[in-house]
Image (cartoon, one colour):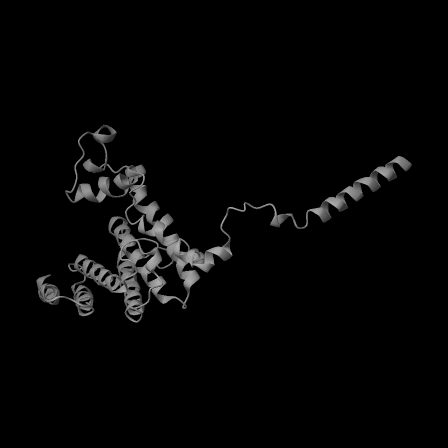
Length: 272
């Protein structure tokens, strides 16, 4: 009995000593080569680092076969941009209208995993404090997701990240309306802060030039307007006119071309 008491006392002592010695081990049990959250926030990398995967996933070029599945063997085939030199899957594949689910999944998974998730994080991190950063993310989101809607029709867009409405899809019409609304938000924020240089370090396209981002947004708006011109000519007309009316710093040649496009857009309702 005495030996049991001694053994129990020793075990208890060891436990207490071990517990007290490990209270502050977290500060030592880390890789000192890792970047801390505080270090990321110093140069705004906690937000800026999320843009690169978005840029690289509207079309995903690495690995190369990912681009083939996301774009070549789908949209490029059906639009006549590409034809395959040999009969994939014994000739029963997308090029012969025998859809291969393992191929088509990349059209959906790449934008959702790498674009939508990162845009949501940017929106949450920037809030109302950095509207231009959120604006660029919105333009990139529309650039990626309108392709998904054009392939699948209904998509999860306005409800993305909303746990209470998880899995609730937008119709393609609702998705397009949401695209236009996001472009409205983006253009308004950028137009009010054209001289801001905050995005320059993270911009893989325009070096932080917000004027060019506004032009991109309006070009994208015009593309979407033309795509719905046969199903909703009134909406197409209004969005097309809005895209051209917001054009910034056009040269005389560009101005003339824009006038011609504007004439086309204004007559959409008569053409269709």
